[in-house]
Length: 150
Image (cartoon, rainbow, N blue to C red):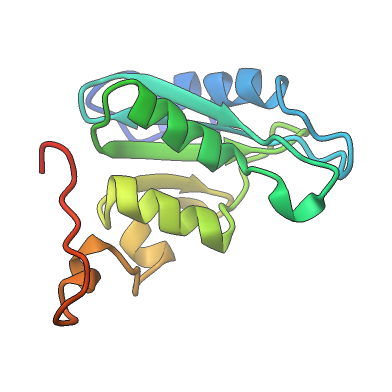
């Protein structure tokens, strides 16, 4: 997709985001699956953050690229994700797995813009019934979760 065809962002560009995801993907540790993934996102304050998948011999303990991205978000002071994409080893745009959609929901919300293989979508379209901290308050006696600065 050429730059002229991509939606305009308030800061940076989708191509800049994809290039950052490709760099992150090249750092992935994927000796078991052979499937490296890189992720990149913009944060509400304009930061560009990235993550890559890190596998483990105990395959269930592997971390998806989105896990690294959210760790980078929190380590860098938090904020809300505004625009996100992930790429595979062929540099193709890919879909986040279910677990990662939940991470994106928690840290970006329903308005998070995603570049998907089929085009651009809000997270609300990809995951219309997300579970978040607000749901914990629906049960009397459940732990109330307060997020930093929100």
